[in-house]
Amino acid sequence: MSAPRQAPRLKYVQFSESIVDEVVRLAGGQRISEMVLQIPEGIENCDYLIGNHLLELKIIEVEPLEIQGHQEKLACLITELASDEKNTAMTSKQIHLKGIANQRYWRIIGTTVRRRLEKAASQIRDTKILLKRPNLWGAAFLINSGADSIDANSFWRLARRHRRDFSADVNVVMCFSAIPGIAQGFNRPCVTFDHEHSGHETDEAFVKLFQTSFSSVFAKKIGKKPDEVISNDTIVQPFHTPFEIDIPQGKIVINSKKPE
Image (cartoon, rainbow, N blue to C red; front, side, top):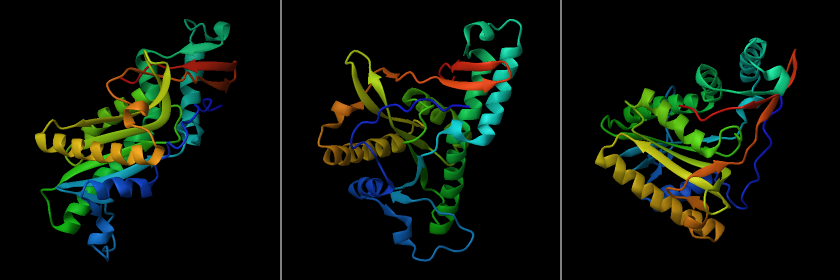
């Protein structure tokens, strides 16, 4: 199977854990490891505490289509579709995923996002026990720096959908996609910062604080105002990067819709 062609990256838009450290400090937070010098064995703590919110950072660096288990599941799905007499894949050499097939596709690819939120939820629970503060709120910050098959819009949709399965621990999920798209109406590449939360005013205030700090560090890092690069309420079209798959019937191009 061939991975999607890599979308061109925006110069200097690379956010590592050390950069997020800056964002957290600016927001008045600190690392849990600075608060508790010796973490008991068996406890997997999250990264930060900002006010009354625990925050876990997860950076996606690996392309899901390069994971062998995902490749095998996708190969089964595509082979099944191509073998369907109603499908014109062997004539057009393309498959347009829709309905149940599209849901199955994103269930496979979306595992990358789901597992990180599941792990973040577990770490948030452990950290509440560690700090003996059961009433703390929980948040996850996901950065997509390497999964080109997950465009910015799909990234947020996946995070929003899967957060709800772990909402008891993850009240807020924030997503920064370093995979550029095109801002509709402006014809310029941009990256995106999106979020989804419980709707409680405490979560809303936390997101506002974090996003303000993030934008400030972002501007300092790349020398531009965030609005010049970060999309705000703008429709972002992904760079079109379909991928090809080799099945017994031949090579086929796969086109997917957004996850529901």
